[in-house]
Amino acid sequence: MKKFSTMFLLACLVFCSFIPAFSAEEFTYEDGKVDLVCPDGWKHTITEESLTMGSPDGAVQFVFELLEADDLVAGIEQAHKEINAAVGTTTFGEPVEEKINGMDALTFTGTCPAKGLEIMLSIIDTPADNALCVYYFAAKAAEETHAAGIAEVINGIRPAVVEAAGDEETDADADAGDEEEGDVE
Image 1 (cartoon, helix red, strand yellow):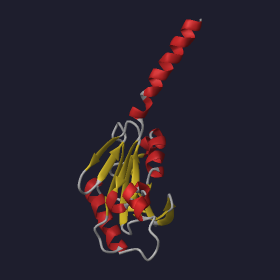
Image 2 (cartoon, one colour):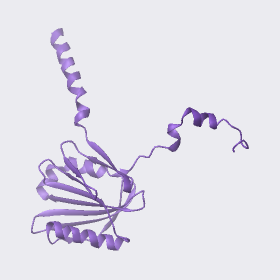
Image 3 (cartoon, helix red, strand yellow):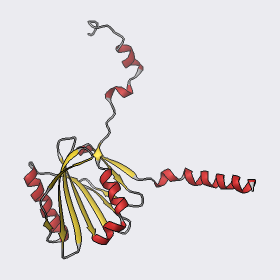
Image 4 (cartoon, helix red, strand yellow):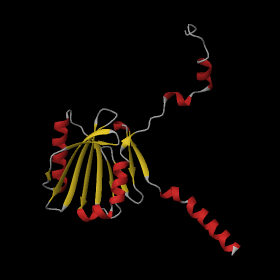
């Protein structure tokens, strides 16, 4: 029995050592100063214009991109045109003002009846003072199937963690800080 317990414990340790290799992938959208999380097993693609994430079966899609419009109204109109071009005619309800992990956002929910899609469009005011546009597309059944992954993506949209400038102080920097005021050249 002791040998079985030891083997079981060893097997658990070996298995647990592989868990980090399967953890969610994190990205920083530098231009927006926003961190994003792609759930385990989800696919992602990064281009110069956007980052896309999709469920393993492709039934749920997120697209993240910075708006190129100069104002919010123009940005929303641009986003609506892009959605209509991508999936077909869509209808949206009134926008809802909300906070996504502390960032102000304006969210529209809608549908594309021709394709049976639920659609969400969120315009997020980022720490970089620009707008991150988040497009979401899914069939109703896929929303239920992938609820945990969807929540992980949404909860993963957060202000980027910025290291303090003084965190990487060198010995020369430390010595320079020892000088008294007035000795600065």
